[in-house]
Length: 131
Image (cartoon, rainbow, N blue to C red; front, side, top):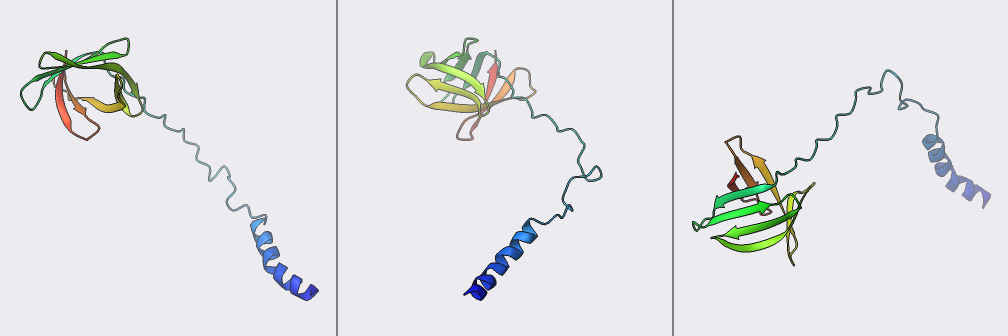
């Protein structure tokens, strides 16, 4: 019986010695340490409050007004269609209409005078003018 226990325990002990060995090959030394400074994470772009206008596929004017106080209003064809709150976060510029779920958009300046591209949650890109 003792012989059986010794035979069964031998591989476990061998693994324990290998795992706990004093091999410092992977230990950091001055020669193999990375001394470069980490690059800071990019800062989240903040969206400028204001009115963004575009023309919908059907030819109606669309206007989204982002207010400094974190509220917004959406107008389409001269009619108010939506109101709610907006915030910039890691997912983009996120709008939460009253009684609805948050929808996040990516707003990027195009380099053209006052023009921005707004990418919706569905990936569709629409060009707006920032006023």
